[in-house]
Image (cartoon, rainbow, N blue to C red; front, side, top):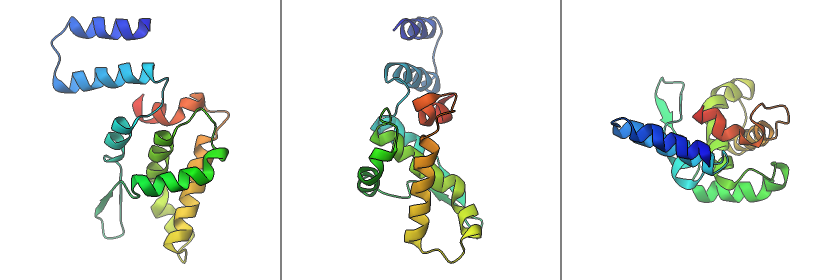
Length: 146
């Protein structure tokens, strides 16, 4: 709570640009939400993710709809540390595709889209279930917000 008060106090002392205000809002939210995503910040961060396809074109996220991710989340929720929420998983899964899909295509050139999705889900779950992460169960938020 005191960290939040200090952040607001520091911000009020200077003239803020819209970017500064958003940054302050994100910092306050991160502290109050104990380092976990909500819908607004998850969707905002995901829309910035992309990979470059074989033709050199950027392919921007989201790669799956909220409903598709929710269905997958329900099937793996027991394998993810309980401190994480749906929006943390939503971000982690989209990020795995942005970061890993081109490598997975090289490793598994004959994989079907369904096989590739399963591999990406497994990567996201494994990435979140990381007991030696210095961020603990705040890894997803911390990875994109520090």
